[in-house]
Structures are given as C-alpha cells and as structure tokens.
Length: 470
Length: 64
Image (cartoon, rainbow over the protein chains, first blue to last red):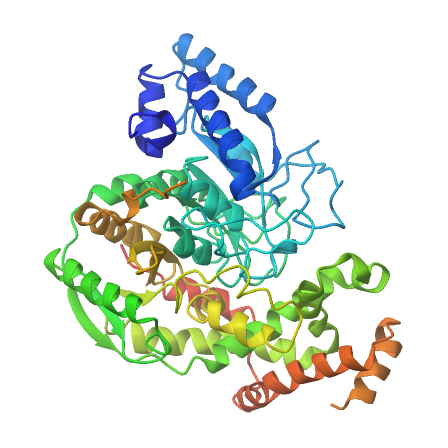
C-alpha cells in the first residue's frame, strides 16, 4: 500500500504536506494508528506522545493555511531514541535509574527538527544507557526486528531501526558510540548515518563517551537521511565541541552526478568471518557501483586490533566517569551486562586512558594514509552476520559477552575510534529473509560524498524499498 | 592484576565490595586489553597531546 502516508518516503511526504496534498493531521493520525497496531509485536516505543504530535501537526497545518513556510520536514512523523531530552518530558535513557527523570532542557537536535516542521511521536526503545549492540532491555522489554520478531533489531538504537523499518515513523534520531546507529540500520534494512565526530550537536543528549558519541539520523533512504542531515548539521553554540563547519544542502548533493569515485575494497579485516550471504551481496554491490562509474580498488587497511582495544579503554573510562556515583550507590539498578561494561573503566590507570586518547591522532593519520591515499570511499560490510535471534544474543554479563559484542561491532567500532563518517545502507537479504547491511566510510566531513554515492546506489537497487512482512 | 589486588582497588578507590566472580570478570577484561595497550603505549611520543586529533580531522577533511 505505497499510497498510505506511512509508506511514502520522508522527502516525498514532506513535499506533499508542503504542497497541501496531504495534511499533517492526516499523516500523524496514520502513523499513530500504525503504531497502535504494531507496538504489541515490536515494542519499539517506550513512550508515545500522541497529544503532542497532534498539536504539532495542527500547528504545521495552520502555518500552511497562513501561507507560511512550514519547513523542510513539514508534518513528518519522527520518534527518537529515548535519550534526546525535551524539557518537561521523561527521558528514560532505557534505564531503571532514569525511569522517571524529567528533562529540564531540550536537545538542539530536537529543536532543529521542531523548527523544520517535524512531529515528535515519542521516545523509542534502546539498550540501557546506550551500552550494547543487541537490543535487549530488561526494564522495558526487548525491541523486536520487524523482519522476524524472534531476531534482534540491533542496538543500541534498537527502536529507531525497527520503527523506521516497520513504517511506524519516517525517520529517527539515534546515537552512535561504537555502531549504535549503523548496527540497527543493517539489521533492520534501513539507511543510517554516523556523521563525523562533532558534525551534529550533542547538547542535551545523554552522554556515554564524549570522545565517540555521535548523533545521527536513520531513515528509509539516503535521500531521506540527507534531508534530515541538512537540518541537523552545523555548529551549535550550546555544544562547544560541535564543529564550526556550516551545514550543507546534503539533499542537493545527492542529485549531483557521481563522477568516477574510487571505492576501496578492504583486503583484510573486513573480510574476516563474513557470512557467505554478505560476501555475495558485497560482490553484487561492487558490480552495481562499477556500473555506476565507480572505480573499484583493493585497499589494504592497517591492523585494527589497536583501534578496537583502545576504543574499549576510552569508552570504559569515560562511561565509568559519568556513571561512577550510580555504580557505587545503585549497582543493582543496572542490567548486569551494562554494569560490567561500564565498571571496567573504574580500574584503568589514567595513563592508559590518556595514552589511548593520544594514539587516536596517530592511528587516524595512519588509517587515512593507507586508505584515503588509494580511494575516496571505503566499502565494508556493516556487520559480519545478519541479525541473530534475541535468544542467541542473550548472554548477559557472562564470559561470552566481550567476544560476542566485539563480533557484532567489529566493523563499526574501529570507525568510531577514528571519528570518520559512515553511511549504513541495505545491500540485500539473507536466505532467512533478514536484511544485509553495508557501510560506506569517508574522509572527515565527507557526509555529502557518502550520501551522494548512497543515493545513486539506491537509484540502481531496490533493497531499501522492501517492507517487512508484519 | 590479580583478583585480590582488584578487590583492594575497588574497596580503596571506590568503596565497592567486589565478589570474587565479579573481580574475575573484570580481571579477564583488563587482561584482554592490556597487551595491546602496552604495545601502543611504546609508540607514545613525548609531545603527544589528545587535542591534536581534532586538528588531524580538519587536516584530513575532504577538499571540495
């Protein structure tokens, strides 16, 4: 039913509302009805703000009726990982500790989306405190993958990936510290961007690791992500760490021709332990890109073990600093797996942390020297495997946990350590019907290049148009 | 670091009483990252400084 408002792409929907072909109220009602229907199966939402969404929809329609510009996201139903603060609203961060915590300020990312006319339908399920790639949540129940509800939607932006894929909302904000936008994008067959470190404001967003936390959008296509990024990117005076680079018209960049970029195929690491279905999908992807005029080049990559291990040190130290008081006073209020991963940082010497921080510069230059001297964009799998079942990933804080988590985030975590932008795109399906994801990695601040390549790839394929059978 | 050392650190630094099982789990993690951390630390230069990373991101940025 492609003509249903819930099934129209974000860009097309906003343009229809702006052109008065659809009212924002109609659109909001359609999304709320679909959410009511699918929430029992998927558990995407922690909280629903139907009244707020309807008020915002009526305000958009009123602006249009007055002849005002309602913004580039007019009437677009969005919902966000429940860690983007909105003044006066509970932001649980997926946790027991913040289950009733009411924010006293509003995330700049939300303020920008509001100003662009978007509707905020509520807070989405997530891994507790954004620590973990599996989508489990002991407080609010696991979110489920709409392609097969016994499978994981990935994490930690679990609800974001599942809600976008299931056509409950047209887009969503996630956060990505080691893969938390890209993993749910890959497992749910949607398109998600982890921008360059500092590209999008993190003001009034739950922190986990200041060195790695990134805010970014998940949506159904690269073009949809581009429109969201055009609204989100750019310096924020409220976030002193945000880049001074101005935002760009990423959507316009998508429409520019692809002029023979060199796409790098890693000769090691990203080929290790790969599911055969992903291998085949990436081979086909290479052919599609070549037919688009891209030059495919084999690219050696530096050893990734330091990137993974030093990432772990920095993450643990920074997260433990944020959580130390609660780890001491309320240890029983954490999911044991989350607690274990955070508390490690309590026992690392400060010198190890600072050595890891210092190494980031050197290792980023080494990576860029090997990779971006040979190609413009690196193509990797998004994950080594399609989404496992929730039961397979239910390892708690056992000794199996570190290896499992490293396996799931093996291809995303190193890119987080380097702070590079990456776009996750669907690139096929496994035999069991679950989506497969790939990742395009670019130079710092090359979001426009990644989105353009992603958009042209999606003009030549239809993986992103497939709808889960729920 | 052995189990008892870790439990003493937890008690002294943070006022946390770790069970033996908890201490073993944490120790195994620390053991898993330590060799790489030590190896990388030997590449550390006297003038290294974390903020250089941000300048590197700008320097490596795509030129339009």
